[in-house]
Picture 1 (tube, rainbow over the protein chains, first blue to last red):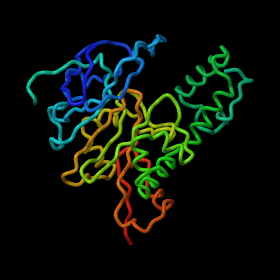
Picture 2 (tube, chains in turn brown, purple):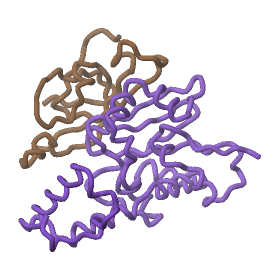
Picture 3 (cartoon, rainbow over the protein chains, first blue to last red):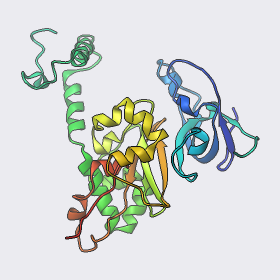
Length: 98
Length: 208
């Protein structure tokens, strides 16, 4: 599993995994940045089904520009959003900065 | 529902027994008791735990942070420890993050996936916090949501939304309103509303 450092640009995997997931649909496929590392946590997607959730995996505070999330965002370009995203939902993003 | 199963919260007229959801919860509760997954005492303990918590806890933390910069630093870096200093036991599996409003940044808390909320400090969230309407709109049009709460962020203030997607629970540290320089901690705490701890509003003090 790829791990990340603060400042890395990332993209949320556009996975359509069903069941108990902790990555909201509106973030899937969107690009942002690693703001900080929250630590290592058991995977809630397995815990929800009575599994151990191990090995623990990194959890990141990920920042997104609102303008990158919504095509018709009403506010200024400086508005942004943070969500906590587990490492397995993230991939490195090398593309153009929006 | 067995006749012998008698709860304090099932009193006639409490309003809790009428909805299909309440009936479903009671059915699940009865099963959990019958299968010895939970005991009556554990359920009562949990109800007492939740009822002992309220936004007044958050208001005390904020008021102390306004008058004591060192406490504020601890509240931002170690929320559970700072809460314990005021006798607020926020221990448990989830972590707490306090986000500070500044003249440039205003924070708003939401849980789009369900209803994550700093319950160990503030108790149960308001019903609107759990509504599909708030959860979907807070991330997409936070400024419109705030306007509906009567708060218009000043020009040049950036809005930062925190979506509680993991085991972090967020609370806003609002800014101390102008004109409150002579107030003591208790008076300040009275200005801190539940909504200002979520970020849909700010504490207000009307001079005169």
